[in-house]
Length: 344
Ligand code: MN
Image (cartoon, rainbow, N blue to C red; front, side):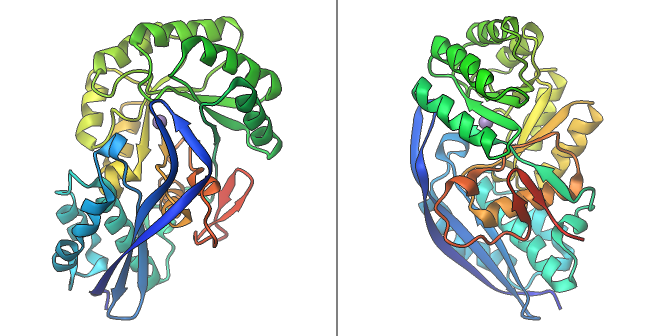
């Protein structure tokens, strides 16, 4: 028992409650792919791919056309030997979110087959985590309102998107700080600054007495020396997001001492590389956060279990399902405000 006897791909469309604005992109919705695996026992496993052209160069149409290949490749394989399926799907460098969806569906099916939740298969390190919520780029007034609402809803880590306009960003950060005192901040420039602008931003914010817990991807993904420049010239910890897809990217970031944090997203790395990155980053005495693309509750579920299982993450940016118009919550976890947990 445990053999894969069917693989189904379904396109799923979701819309954001309000347009999601980050540097150079305003997104109104997403088309994701849901993968369902059926085992010979009748057990079912689910995974979700949320493709990103901006980060991964992926197009959902291309991923969907891979369905016959995926089917032929994993049909008949046994999910109890999931590393064999991970090794095969590790070749999918051009479609990392599809690799993630397959690997997650395999673990989910294995979990259903043996009656052990995925977070325990991965180690069961924790049973509760806390997520941030994101203030996207907007007018000053709307940024303040959004931050106020997020704080009122109980979130104590607020992610602030910046990177399009340095002086507006500094002003927004100051005003957000005034209405959310006691919160921690993750500031994400999504590659929008030059290294010198990023240092200017950090120094000005620091002088105003505002602390930033993580300064995410201040500069271009390929500018590793720029990341290092910001790391050693700003008072805040610097994170790689767009610069860190595979374990090979992270090996280089560690060797070049370019960052303090790595933002892992399953959609960039899949479970297999994410597991390797966790060990590499911990071994190098650096820190981890866990983020998402535009996953629904099925996809966010994958990340919640990954984090609970490994227990490796200081911060979580798992809020996409809170912003999409999903009719039914389908995660195998519970959520109360920022808290995401499983009951033992
Ligand atoms: Mn980011």
